Length: 256
Length: 197
Image 1: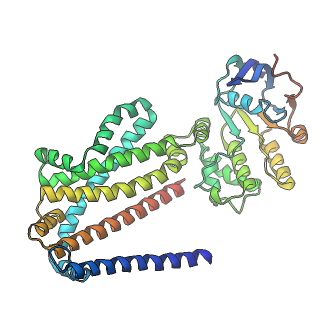
Image 2 (image 1 turned 60 degrees about the horizontal axis):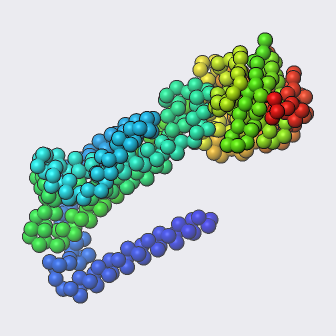
Image 3 (image 1 turned 90 degrees about the horizontal axis):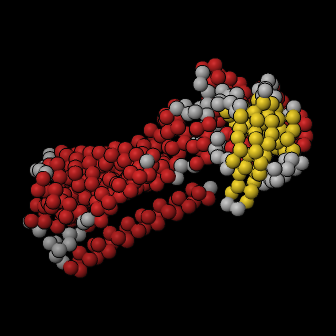
């Protein structure tokens, strides 16, 4: 009963916070009185509906999503492999450290510019999304691997668990919360970095290209609308992916 | 035929837990190890199970296939009671026996329940069922009836007695009546001089 009241209260507060932000945005646009500097929420939402009706909207969003999410999935696969290796052989963690520290600390813009020399605009966002998501996923997974209960490992050794059972009953419960948190942060970052790479690499038919032209023509409404599209799509993909991950784990837990 | 423990030594930091400890654990019988808390019973069990290395001494005739009920339950929280027990089963027959054993221990209504939703006493019985279901030549039971009420404890003790007859069992307990009811031999750490050799 109390939980449901708290939930309702939270929902009301969230809606109030969004309405307040929209009100402040509208007030700022009325005060500045320049569509170029700041488009009003009404203009942006109107423009968004206009975008939704254009024939290329869906393919543009899909094309960018495939590349950015693709980069994220490659990062996830590599992070699983590297963190398992580093967890199993601690000396490798020391060898991996300088590479991952470099990727973590060098500004994304530097990577984009350097990568543009080697890669086409089409491949750039895949590579940049991969690069930005990798250290986060790797660190989270390695932390999860290290947090495995030693007593459960002893238990698995004693009962001679197969590698699959060892993974399912011992490693997965420890890694799961870190994987969820890593995926949530990593996906968000992959979107931010991936779109930034598209704006610089300008691959044709991408969201980044749309943002680039919006900037070129000082079309603030278009810029804000595409930004809104990025936020909505990235949040939806993140929620969907985490739901899928939960379903996979629930399936695995029932598999025994 | 026995497992022979000879001059076993183990210390943690500056604390000597086992000093020149000697014992015979007869095969195919139940041996109880009794003694006050912190006297080294679990350390001895951990060395016999291979979780700790002794600082000195030797163990002769220790079987390879071991099973145990640990002081903690050590169960996988997100899995059902049955899945936890079946995880140690190597054959189809053993998997079928797992459900029967859980029923024998009074968990017939909770076989499919996730361990995270079970009470402490229920978890203890799942842990017990898992140890009994595993293939073993040497079974260590470290305070196996901890947290069980009298009636459930009596049921669990009957089940253990029935399933371990003719097997090599090391029962660690501080309860005299548990040792008397299940063990053929008793090693009393309070009387043994485990610290002076």
